[in-house]
Image (cartoon, rainbow over all chains, first blue to last red; front, side):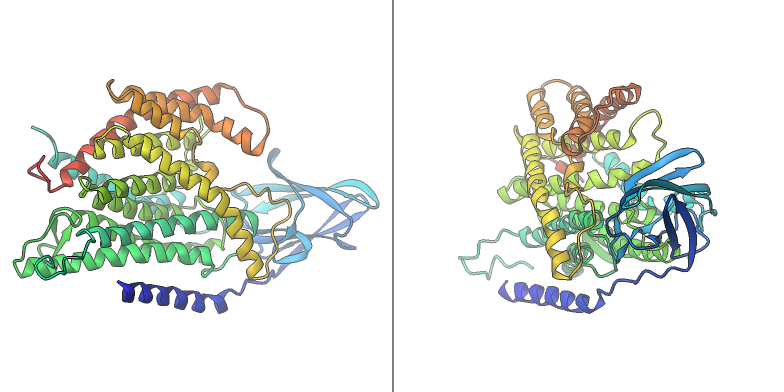
Amino acid sequence: MRKTLLGLLGTLALLLGVATPALAFEPVNVVHTEKVQAGPYDLTVGFSTWPVKAMQSLDFTFVPEDGIDGKKGTLTLLYGQEEMDDSPLARHPRKREVWGLDIYALPEPGTWTLKFDVDGPAGRASGELKNLQVMEQPGPPMGLSWAISTIPLFGLITFIVIAWRRTRTP
Amino acid sequence: MDITAVAPATRTVPRGLVPAGFVLGGTLISLIGLTWDIQWHSDVGPDTFFTLPHLFLYAGSAFSGLASLVVVLMTTANAKRDKDVDPIVGGRAVGVFGRTFAAPVGYLISGTGAALFLVYGLWDQWWHGLYGFDAVIDSPPHIGLLLSISITMVGAVMVFAVARDQRWGTYGVIIAAAALLVFSMVTSLGLRAVPGALFNPVSVGTAFFSVMILFMAAHALSRRGGAFAVGVAVAVLQAVFWWFSPWAAEVYANAIGLPLRDYTDGIPGMPNMIPMCLVLVAVVVELLHKVPAWIPGAVGGAMIAVCAPLQRVLTYGGPFPINARYLTTIVLAAAFGALAAVLGRRFGHMLRHLAPAKENSHA
């Protein structure tokens, strides 16, 4: 028993030891930018993949010309005219000097709007990145993806049906 | 495998406990990995294949899977040598791939879940290559992975249910069922794919799985207090994870030099998916044990749906939405709760058939 426990602890230590050097987080690579004028603030919106596709996650960055110090604000995502999300502008977890969204996906293809409300030394102002075109999702149709992913559930149901029939009380 | 004739008299570990303990331990490691990972994504963010929470998820399935494999191979070896196979270890053995393997049915299920986890890991890797490293818990491959772990957890309930006449079997069923119930709260998030304009499918799913697993465990143990014990075990897991999840996310972030996200609310993600009223539901199940199962099932399902927004208001604040969608959700949760109770009771009956003991002659 003691040998087994030592073996298990050794395996865990090995796993952690191997894991540590692999913990290198991807840098934020901006491959496309758009400009947004929010009153006195010049914002640059960066995208880590372009064009944007539905459900495909990417890094967004939002950078005022003179940096984010002393400023705060809100980002509102609109799909057509419908408000989908409303959250404070937060620093990007892997690029702390700018605001951003990390590995974030827009769920639907079509026309999106990013609305910025910025509050800083030059006062409050709003600006929008209109007509952000999001293409169709890549990959197989969602129905097929769900069919593949729920095979374990249907397998379990089949097993239950067999067990049910075999344990029926006469 | 038959050690009783040569084992020293001081040996006290009951037969079947060690492999069952490994399978249960693996599922608990998976559960820890899941709550930690969910919290990591909400409080910190950056992701790789080898984050520590991910390693817990992989290690959990590996533990359970390897333990199951060892039992199946040992049982197969015994069967080939025409030795008696003791069904206290995972239930009666069934033939797999003809008669190539002899697998105790409980370990067959737990091992199958672990094997599926590997397959769905590959599917998830392909998905991330196509869609990016999105931190979406309810993507199709993630639900496939969660379902695979759930199958291992069902196997864990089975291997303990076989020994329910012994104390370790009883405790094992309670803990394994509690782990399955907690885990199912996350798997229920897959129901967000169901259109939710008229009702909240996740609340209905939560009610269904909670009631079903409570009834299943209670009837498998067939003793007063079974449902209540599972309810208390779930509450203990909820309390421990409530403390653990944000703590572990922050400690791990500090250890690798990552900051917490701006505007992190610190509310434990997975523990907050577990209905806080579950102990009360379990009390109702116990008190109404003499009426048909569907009645306490419906009451329990409705209670869970009634309390879901209350819990949200309690933890996140905001308004309490009494509207047609809320009321429809309660009615549907009651209906599915009634169905879940009947199914859970039957599943408990099926678990009792696994046991080698007195009361049945076939499985």
